[in-house]
Length: 245
Image (tube, rainbow, N blue to C red; front, side):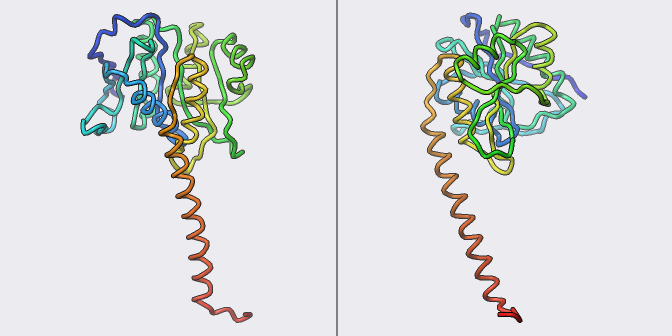
């Protein structure tokens, strides 16, 4: 596998011990959707990009502008850096990317790394779960009733590597995972995880736009299911070959 490079286009020198927030594709595309919304509503500035010859050859287009699919945005006002990927990170690049993120976090003296994502528990709920390399963070989240802790389980990819490395290095890495659909993009789950992030970081995050998308998607899915059922019923009647009618 070719090495991953994280290249800054801004020095970010005015950040003061920021939080680094990650949003990568996964269940329901929760991480990418949440990070993209965060970049838009907080009006974060472009600060760099991540590249590797093993990455998919694509560009993300936002507001008419082609941009690297994996990139950094930041804000001095909110003291935050968001690292987003709108493409799937190759499994073989996960360890290298995790290491590059930790190096970057240390270079800007970040207090912690927070990863946003989705989790499928097949319970149909709207819960958000937390796992962290830092036990005091879990205790604080539980005390404030922000999210539910995960006692046993496993997480993979860049987030999984970061959590393990955070434990070994005694560096705070936290993942917030919202219950999400495995079958389609889930903006509702992205809303849930952003609300948790807002409380965790004490940053106001307007989720009205995403909530509207979630309602429209939910309505569209219900209509599709209804039409599908009607179509199936109609098809059975039209074929009408029931010998036992």
